[in-house]
Amino acid sequence: MTDVHDLLARTHDALARAEAPLDATRHDDVLSGIRRRRRRRHAGEVLGVGAVVVALGAGGWLGLERDGAPQPAQRPTTTATPTGAATPDPDAGRAPALDAPGLAPALVMPPGTLEAATPGWVLTTQRPSYFSGDPVAASAPSAHVLDLVSPAGERYRVLDLPNDRWVSVVRWEAGSTQALVTTSEKGDNRVATLDLLTGGMTLLDGLTGGIEHVGRTGDGLDLWSSYDDDDVLVHDGQRVVRRLPAVRDGVLDRSGALLAGTGPAPGADAGDGDPGSPLVVDVATGGVTVVPAPADDTCVPFGWSGTEVLLTCWEITPEGPRSTGSLRYDTATPGVAPRTLAVEGDIEGPLGRGVELADGRVVVGGDPFLECTAAWGVVDPAAGTFTRGPEPPAGRIPLSVDAIDGAAYVTTGTQCTGDGGPVDLHRVDLATGATVLLSGLPDTTDLPPDASWISTMTSWTVGTS
Image (cartoon, rainbow, N blue to C red; front, side, top):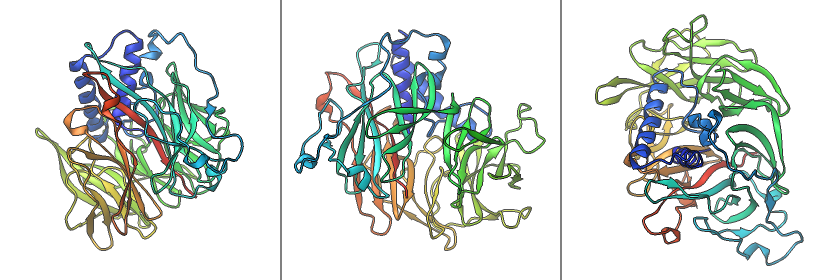
């Protein structure tokens, strides 16, 4: 996953290389623009890029590098350098890895650590950069690394990555020595498999430009939203095997068979101003079911509970978006109107994308682009309850949530303050509430005078089974 603050960092990076750095006013305008685009996208407008987990470089986000802006003279190498020891060393597990300003402290990774990792371990990339000077511009990154973090917060250095390219982890099966990543160089956004032992990358055919990883089907295929042609691409690791109708903000059910999101209804012209409808797409056949949501509200699927699609609805008012409640639509009885999802202690505002647990509960957070709220937690549709998760640190709000095997993974940032600072990552045990900091904020003593960090952790993914 990537977050809005890292998209801002990439924007500064690209502008600085184009000799057009952002001053403080333009920085605020970019942040406001991202939030404004997000609101409009949720209202149903097709924007061509996503703002939550699209792993793009800054040029891909703002269209700068593709427009012929000056590029770095030095080209990155195609392989990164592994930093793990070449031979077993009984003391290697406690040896500190090389450090750089802004990096979280890490240990040299002993051989076999990757292969022994179990679901719940996390891969994360760090690329620290800061704002300094007038006009404001992003610094060159102090380092670019990929780390492995245990559920207890122990961090191991896996690879050193090239500083002048972006690499974002997308999917990783715990215990594997390969990960699915996106990579961006000179505005050329690609998808690749990354060898975690050697750093070698193998580019995948058919996946370029503005793309977002949606999830994995029940038969092991990856789904990608393409913002270049508005299709959903089904990829088998070698090639695109089929295309599905356009679905924005897609969320898969637990079986990986049905994809819910928003898009033009069958037969509608996507260019005629149609704001789009809630849809469910069969990923095997491409068949589309339109969810009969209220016409006066904007309703977007935010998760699944069994065969039911859960929708969050709102209306746009002069004061901003106002939540009008949540709905549940059973795909087992198509055509039947959605029912109200009554939840005691309902979370404030519209909901962001949720993750279904094995028992049908859904881990959710507010949508920071629509409503500033510190609330996140677990919705139980069967019981009609919402249980809040632990509050984030003061002044910070949840930006994204993921969940696996009874634990939630929550990033927090200062999105609502307008400060494009870095994000952190917490693991929360959903049974006990115990919280472990997996990726913290950088040390401000590493900064030059009058500088502030904008980016450290740039992506992360939880290892799955």
